[in-house]
Image 1: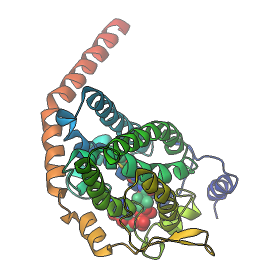
Image 2: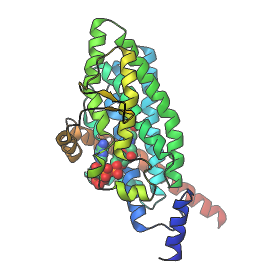
Image 3: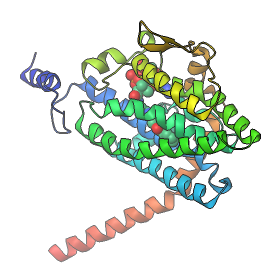
Image 4: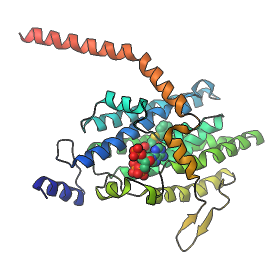
Amino acid sequence: MTPEEKNFLRKIEAEEKIEPKDWMPAEYRKNLIRQISQHAHSEVIGMQPEGNWITRAPSLRRKAVLLSKVQDEAGHGLYLYSAAETLGISRSEMIEQLQTGKAKYSSIFNYPTLTWADVAAIGWLVDGAAIVNQVSLQRTSYGPYSRGMIRICKEESFHQRQGYEAMLALAKGSPEQKAMAQDALNRFYWPALMMFGPHDSESAHSQKSMEWKIKRETNDDLRQKFVDQTVKQIEVLGLDHPDANIKWNEARGHYDSSDLNWDEFWSVINGNGHCNRQRIEHHVAAHEEGEWVRDAITAYNEKKRAKKAQRAA
Ligand code: BYC
């Protein structure tokens, strides 16, 4: 083992953060770039399902809240792209990987938002699942990722609460509103559980990521936490639990639940969900429309640099 490698492992063991200029194994760097960039893509693509309802929010208050939530997601994407850039990949490379299907984004964003209740369900369940995962990632071993997560978690907590509050308003509303809330819960519950990834036994990256403390808890452990916390929340809403097999297991100290439809999971992450094509097409169109902004910034920076050089000469 080289001295650099030894020092890297010592830091991991001692819970010291690895920083951009520190030596790190090539595989550690590669794995982090993969996870952080996919996380960034999820935040950015994740604006689409909710963005679809900004013009149709049921009140000015709901519209203002949704607008700022969607803007927050864009901000999360930017923090995460910046964190990935510290590892030596450029923003344009990452975007190219997303648009050509080389990089994934969270499966959840390939499901359509059919009603207003879906927007509430996303805030409650999708941001709720994201928080369970991201609270754990606050302790990830890579400094810039960890610090990004601390900030993102603060905003996600607000997102989750506004979603739950919107869901509560529907669940306690008219019979039609309650039915709409139940339908959204029934459709989003299972895909939210899939956000945690495949079973640990099927997870290609978990072992190494846990060893290097990129991930601090396994996919199944985090999913179980989410299952457990959601039962009471559904009760308070007065809705029916979508899983007929949900049952407290005294010996385990957890709820037992049904297994997920893994064929659906793999099909969605391999590009065949309801909205995969639509999400990427929309991203490509928005990126092309924004080209003049990027060109203008480049030209402005060039001009500034030339002026500075002229003054210095
Ligand atoms: N969807 O070995 P595994 C948000 C892939 S956005 C798609 O277990 P890993 C929000 C996985 O990438 C926040 N792909 O992987 C935004 C790998 O494929 P590759 C989203 C998935 O990385 C807007 C393969 O399956 N949160 O909150 O150890 C509005 C094998 O999996 C998924 C994050 O991104 C999936 N669900 O563990 C509202 C969290 N699951 O790369 C809300 C950050 C697995 O070999 N990411 N795959 O081609 C992570 O924590 C981890 O990457 C995962 C997967 C737990 C997701």
